Image (cartoon, rainbow, N blue to C red; front, side, top):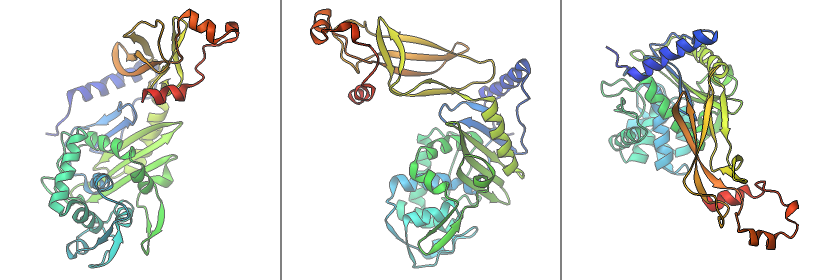
Length: 372
């Protein structure tokens, strides 16, 4: 029986109930055996279907391969292609034994051409061996909280010890989208590098407005697998489908649903005034947004851990703004004093015309630099 997580199943039932109560269309359905739609910044699951089922993931594996290689390797390194890499079965960037390419060129071949040969060449170079690299892949997966995943190779070829879930792959995609180099490569449609011209297999780059990548996959046993990310109006969503013969259309439907039904509400913006307490502006030390369905609202509560009494320097942390949905906390942001709070005598000495002085946050970035 496929493994599922009760909390996520309960979330899906609540989502359906919310759809019925607010009059919105029922949540989108897909052809995939397993699927998930997740808001990237918050991690909120907007739709799921058997998202906790352990399944073969084919070449979407290469998202993790690329992430580990970029973190642990050097893009300008020269890699000599081994015989094992050159003769790897399956999809290929057509490497030749003994040829030398940069690690960056191999990563383009990995993510655009889905080269199994590139995956082995990358693994041997960065990990010292395929076995050593796979060990690092599993360590990274554990760090990302991918509790129901196991990796046996860097390319996604079928193996009983090689599997993941839609939920775990969404966690991986969140980490991958936080890596600028990986995003740059995965979002490239066509590139000429290292004497090769390569075209991205990911058709969503053309089909979906704002698509940023990530990776396609297919084996006969795994079926079609697809992990993608799209951005609209500053909001990023991640979609994962496993064993889905209609994945291009399903990802389009998931994004149309997610962006319309769960637009992100920005509750705090880095360096902007979030509240005022005793005449003193409090600014946000970070940004925070949360996807909200129709009829949902976030509550904001201030938790101050010190009195706003003079003297107090601008940039001093004085507490947190806590955001809650239906009584459950969903996030919090540190609050900083936006300006110096001086004793009355010091204020008069520093500002002869105190009536013209305004308490707006005029040096927000200076304050944040002090804080960080």
